[in-house]
Length: 522
Image (tube, rainbow, N blue to C red):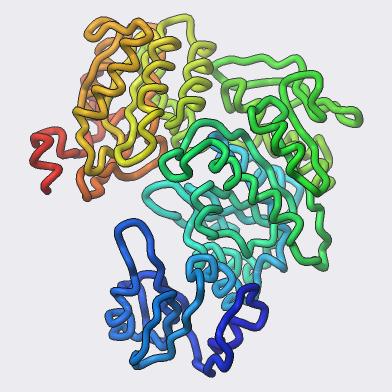
């Protein structure tokens, strides 16, 4: 690909007379640059990657894009107003605009994005459609599953386009793309040519990044405005917006969306609704109904919130793609579960132990409510709140658990460079404000492994333990270091110790044997 050809369909102002430089790839990290790469220098957080241009050139970059006024480089330099926004279009052009050759279903929301994306993907596969998926957990391309990173967010723009191109090359025709508010705010999916847009809900999260609920909602809403900009595709353009009638965002999105739209919900006023829903520890059953639809749904997923996720997937695929309702129902039934989402860990103990990703106030609320319906015993929750992130939710999550769980264990969740003791005190204050009594109904245990051990010691026959916030994630950040950590491994290790059977070893965290001052300073 020639450098100048990246700008043939470029939607922003750019310099004239771009040279004929042959490119082999695109990189945004100087350490990832290989000979022949275009290096896109972006500013973000505490890092300005313009400072690493010399290193990128040393590693083989043959051209540079940035927003500084620079001269005297040994390779061509193209100054653009917003390199971060430009990147997604440059990458799309480099990979020959793969999204234009695919039917693209975008899924966004605060909670339930990954589950809904997986449900849609399973429905497409059940319908015989050659479909891929890019989620915050992984990218699925045929039989190949690729990890998309330690912590969950939409992959970087050039990685998204690379995945899409790989799908086209593999003969796929559809893709389900999970999109986060960070992904939209940072323009990572601007060139993805969406055909169907789905929202699960928009609740309290990422206010540290967006500043307010309105700004956060606006970032999510960009998925729906993008439907209007999708170019005509040979396979057609459904241009359907699918929104949650039960969510606080409904009125705004219902007015905002200018394309075709449908809503789903648990109430009678929704376009596609659930009737006769029943819940158990083994799954959910309900009838999906609308003016022209009535189909029975069974799923091994649990909780009322997963009824909503199933309705979102059904609305998108039946009405957006014309998939037969019975086939869609079989697709939903084929999803056994999702790693780290209400995942049961069973070593033969006489209580239920679950690992879930719930890391927002709303997600914790619905998870605890689901747990309550799964047992006649007590609900025991374990969770933390991340450092350098939205501080308000620390109090909110502790309040929620004090109200809905019988016992609460407050612990670490990626404290980063913040004081873990300080985070736990903020959470403890929230628990106390809702009647929590420390040492009686809630505890503060800084080490997450020890917190899980405590919950297990507290559990009685028939209780349910819900370890929330980490889910499938594979690391936890203390200071500036990512330590390998998997809540599921930790739960199995603690259960093995408790039951006196051979099992996995508890993963290491610095909170096991270092003071906070020691791990903060490395």
